[in-house]
Image (cartoon, rainbow, N blue to C red; front, side, top):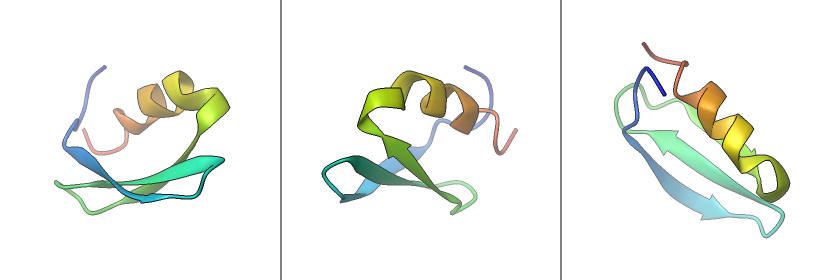
Length: 47
């Protein structure tokens, strides 16, 4: 995965989790059934 990996979980909604990038402060919602794809896309967000 390329790009920024500095993200942390800030909220758990049960069916999804909200992560925030520590580098650019962008938030992303990752659904429990699509975690790998969302994390892959997230890594490209702040290259």
